[in-house]
Structures are given as structure tokens and as C-alpha cells.
Image 1 (cartoon, rainbow over the protein chains, first blue to last red):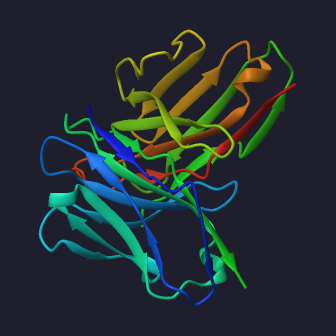
Image 2 (cartoon, each protein chain N blue to C red; image 1 turned 90 degrees about the horizontal axis):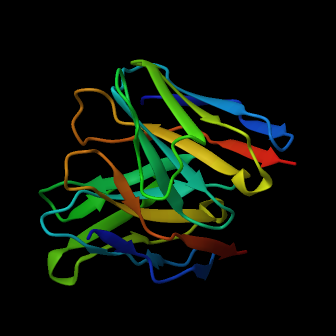
Image 3 (cartoon, rainbow over the protein chains, first blue to last red; image 1 turned 120 degrees about the horizontal axis):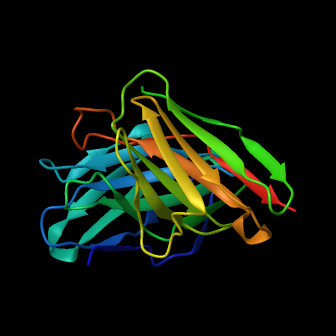
Length: 114
Length: 117
């Protein structure tokens, strides 16, 4: 069965430091992969997505993610974190049955130290 | 980008009453919409798939008689929580992939916070 694992529940980084949020997936074929961000009490905003092609994907707000098939990973990175990046981050994989369903990881809460 | 709205953004109701939540795609058509439930500090759990012109498809463990879904048009899906109880208090989020856009992207509504007293 498809699944998404985000092993880090919380991550705290200092403002200006680099960030990497981990995401591992279980999938039988080339997956559709997404990273979303959710601010408190808000809906989800798409940061970036991977369908095919270049394995390094650029997104909004200075985020990027790299698809590594050999490691079944799609980690999110940002070279310099801003205080406004504090939020909940969700990795998701698209269901392989063409239903357009998304399967979400458990999320990682990012805290930013001044 | 495409916009999905939800109404109301928050609602408080008494136990035993029913609450309707609307999800609208404002500038695109969606034959499919999804309803998620999110408990505090937890991930989104898919409740059901709303299909325009046909019955909704519910995920395992979701009571279809309690969470009534109607996809009345290509831009509107409604979720009715019937006979709500405090354990139904949650954040409900809908999403929609634009029709004919393939797997390009899903757009999420801002969510509806339901509190049942």
C-alpha cells in the first residue's frame, strides 16, 4: 500500500540557517510527489511538485526538493529560513489509481528561532 | 491560480444539530472534490471523494449516513455533518483538482473549523 513517512514531528532552526525536511514514500511506480505548507488555522498551499523529469524541483518561497528514487525520498530544502516559514509542512503522494487522491504524511512542524 | 472557497470558515453548533459546509471552486470546474478531516496537530485524513452527478465514495471507517456529501454542480460540493456530537469537532478541508487538468495540482480550501458543544 502507498504510504508517506515524515520522520520528524518537530524541527527547530535558527533564522537564516538552512533547512531540510525529510519525506519517504512507499510506492509501486514513479510517484507524483508534493510538498504543502499549512499555517495555523489555514488551508494548504502547494510549495512544489514532482511528476517527472529533473529530479531537483524548485518551488515557491525559495524552497526546493530532490526526488531520489534509490532512497524513496523527496526531501524539502531551503538554504536560509525566514521567521515567516514557521508552519506545518506536509509531504504527499498521489494515488496510483488515477483517482487524484492524495496520501499525506503526518507532517513536520517547523519552529524558527529568532 | 485557481481558488477554492469554503463556507463557513468556522461554526459552533449544539450537539444533535446538523451542519452544512460548502466547498466551491471559484474559477474552474471540478468533477471531483475531496473532503478531509484534520484533528489538532495531526495530518489530513481523507474522508470521501465527492463526484459530480453521482454518489460520493467514502473512505473506510467514515460513516456515510453521518457525513452526507452532495456534489450539486461542477463548482459546488457540500458536506453535511448530521446529528453532530462533540467528537465531530474538527477542521474540515476540501480540495479540488481542476477538471481536465490531469494530475497537475489540487487546490485546497481554507478550511472550516467545526466546534460541537
